[in-house]
Image (cartoon, rainbow, N blue to C red; front, side, top):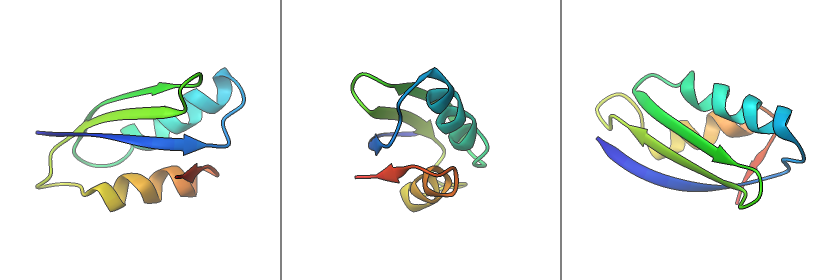
Length: 68
C-alpha cells in the first residue's frame, strides 16, 4: 500500500467533500480516502499495483475539482 496527499481546490461545502471522497473511492485499488474541506487535502491509501497517483488526480478532476 502507498499513501499520498493531494491538494484539492474548488471545494466549498460538505457535499463537495462527499463528491471527492466518492470519486477517489471509485478508483480501483483505493482502500482509504479521507478528504478535509478546511485544509483542502485528500489523504489516500491505495494499492500501486491497481492505481497510480495520476489515476487519483484524474478521478478528482472528473468530479469537477482541481488538484493543485
